[in-house]
Image (cartoon, rainbow, N blue to C red; front, side):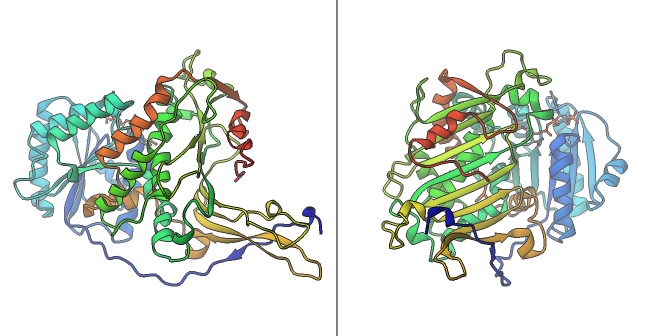
Length: 485
Ligand SMILES: NC(=O)c1ccc[n+]([C@@H]2O[C@H](COP(=O)([O-])OP(=O)(O)OC[C@H]3O[C@@H](n4cnc5c(N)ncnc54)[C@H](OP(=O)(O)O)[C@@H]3O)[C@@H](O)[C@H]2O)c1
């Protein structure tokens, strides 16, 4: 038999039985939506509230109060969000003390009207430059004070700073007005079902954890690839770039879920304590022009995009080899890559196991037998697959990789919910498990900062491809290759 006879078999399907749920019922509350006229509010927040409402997951006593600079007709706003009847609107400048006094009066009125007991969520769906000022004004107006009975929580959108220094300054401002249990930093990747499934797979089963270590795992690949260019967020993106936009937050958070030790329970601080240990164990990257650990790229044509500066050196692609210096992961590289204008939109975590140590199927060598891989697909279709080597039917001895494939939509007859639904519900419940803690920001910025400071070569790549060729070499000379989703 020749290696050419190895074939990929058809997919097998998992079947899913009715599961057990952890009951979660939020207390009555009101949600103040700063930036209610914005893109995020329209595309994610209001539709997610509608989704929660249609599933009966919002508290019975609930209201939304939109806030913005321009007057908006409440009736018109309600007609755009039919699921939420108790929708109100207030306008005023974000930096004027009167706005917060009016907000306080309105909250008192609505809290009484809807019996929400003073429990309030302030969602800052605003440009990040306003986070400081709005937090300060809310604090000054006494609206974050919980000593009168109801609770106050503040949701911050990313980015949380643009470097270590500014992240520390924002953290200090937040600390002046809020206790950490009041702070919810959104990382919408953590609200995706498949991402949470990393924890379920690892810690609700006994078959994976014993092999989840350097002895059996060869390497891990985390890829978040986008087919589109920078599009309508070009202005923001050009001042940010892929390291700030993707790596400091989403990529490192995904890495931590894969790598962390088992927490004793599913409580927010137990999980976040374990994640911190991973961030602290990351081997610092030493970025140099000839670095073997990091490749930055920018797609051809990026500089001609509207609102992008003509001499821009903003990276739209990065790939890096990361090491975790602890007992479990010694010698296991984590390869991370993310970029725009690539061949396909795809996000996945691939845990690639080692080749068998010896092949009894001569003349096949261990390297002819495909290494097992467990893949968590995050987008576009959420699911999990496991590749295993197996005999193909027939009189000849043919071994091929079978893929056991669990497709979320197919298995459950529905698409997984928008991650904002899950995260908004968590805020109402006061569950911070899926929200990065302040110390995680410090550690992740500390890891990324040297890459922002270094003058690294910027490789050009053609749109509609897999990124710079140099990224292949990051793994290529190790006998490994990037998976092509
Ligand atoms: N959009 C996304 O896909 C996305 C994804 C991830 C994270 N985020 C984050 O979510 C937050 C909101 O994003 P977005 O895209 O919704 O922002 P946006 O549409 O640019 O702005 C949101 C609202 O903020 C107010 N605003 C905008 N610029 C302002 C300024 N210079 N001064 C005062 N108010 C201003 C406007 O409301 P009024 O005019 O009514 O006051 C605007 O409707 C940002 O922190 C962003 O980084 C967004």
